[in-house]
Length: 116
Image (cartoon, rainbow, N blue to C red; front, side, top):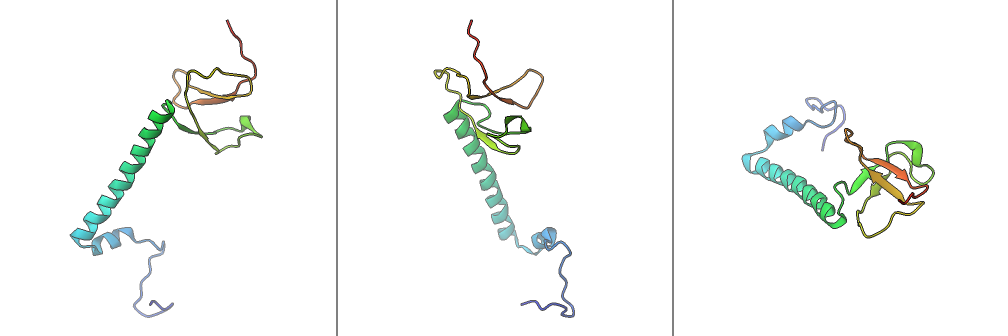
């Protein structure tokens, strides 16, 4: 138990002294922490790759970056995408496309479908 104002007690200003905690760990604890972190990162990557396969989209989740889709979608909303080619595009649907030279996909609502 730490008492406020106790003599000889040192609390870091940020409340998180990460490097100090790492120095206090023995090799087994440090190995366990590194292994846990690697498992979390690899699990996230496997989930992402699984979503890519299931949805048929190279970016299965995108973030709305502008307010052009309001009131349906606001800035910061997450969109879950699918890319099933057998479904025709209809007016009112949300489409996502990439423009050459830009890394960020564009999200828009279909207003009118022009067929050739």
